[in-house]
Length: 117
Image (cartoon, rainbow, N blue to C red; front, side, top):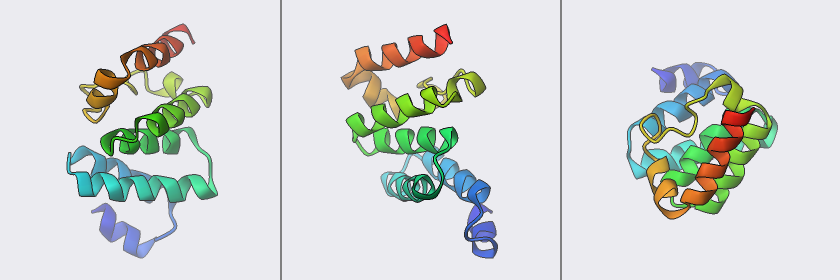
């Protein structure tokens, strides 16, 4: 559905964000790569907290854990944790499980920043 809408409105940020989020939910690595590109392009034109979150999830899926942490930190700094308290929940975002396994202290720190805000 979002691909069809994207063909009609190729520069619509909301459609692109929804397409990227949908691609991340498939669990497929190729879809994660496409989502990472979508969010990278969105961030190139507009630095919005949702785009940082999506880019961070995509980077986590691709094993770019340092980049994922930077993006997720920026999303929190821009207030995304106030909008979505589950932004770092591994049940909601399974791609974060690798980040949790390999960088658990950093992920705990980010979660504490959301809780204290």
